[in-house]
Length: 411
Image (cartoon, rainbow, N blue to C red; front, side):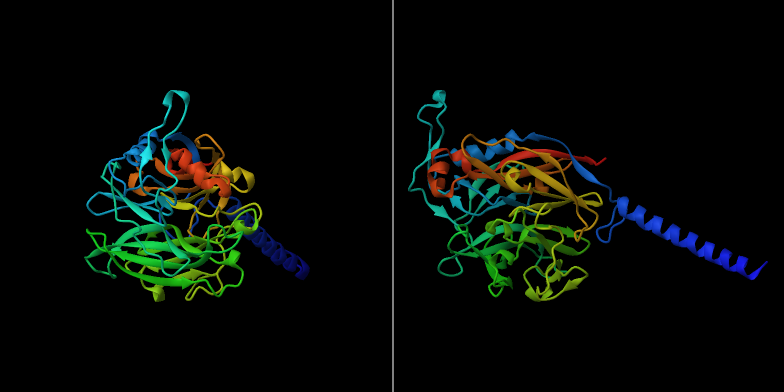
């Protein structure tokens, strides 16, 4: 064979191999359905196939809130999170909460609503205990978590039951807390300050300790500060804790989602936390990089929820822009670190009448199963200047509502 023919043969073989590798890379990019780094199981695109209002759960909290036999229990709140306890009960955690008494509507036939007196006590956090079937039965003495300092408060977010320490047979409840500090506009809901973890005893639910795991006060741009705990996922001996920034407070269309992970049994140990920096897990929280959010078209609301669905992870959040006042959307991924695909699967859950907004969609694994997910969303009066009158004039405007979702393969 002539020398130039041999050269052409070798060159052609190399080009063919290169073409195969390029095509394989393209296919892996176009069809990421079965490739993931963490979690196990088969991953495939998932989206919301159908949904329906869950009147049973919505009405259960409405009946409990309307019950006027006590004046120190829950009558409305937001920041809805839940965790099932070992004895089957479900602990529900709320942020700003109204106690006191609810008054019957003066003219139900004329469309008037149950209302709350303007002097009703407002506390920064509360906890409601439900029976295993999900019916609310009692309110823990509120607030459960006292203010850490003047002009600061704690909002409880995600929680889980885990060993007191790795390998321990004793279990405790660990509750993630957001610390916020009073501030001027646009920080009408407080300046993000720090993430803490509270340890509660079982079965008594006494607060044993509160530790600060990541402090954000040295981050000069408050809209870039990250609070962790809006949602968490336990997988493979790790607790994956998601967080978000407050970009929307300064009119960025969407906020970004961030991620930390902690070995099981060590949520209350700041030194055990590791944070995603875009290429790996680092201590200390320096160099945080978002797992979702480009600041314009993709990202999350101020609070969101992540849940495993087989080998796939589903993320639920309010949609970007003005649609985020009414519309829930979703993303999917094969790993908590992403890449996340979406948004898709939009739906508009029912809202009470008036100038209200929806926010904080949260999946409740304790009540989900059989191919369905139970998701709550909070509602509130849209105008902060008249919020007290808006939510007191109709108590349904400041209570969680529920829907049932059925995820299906995405086409």
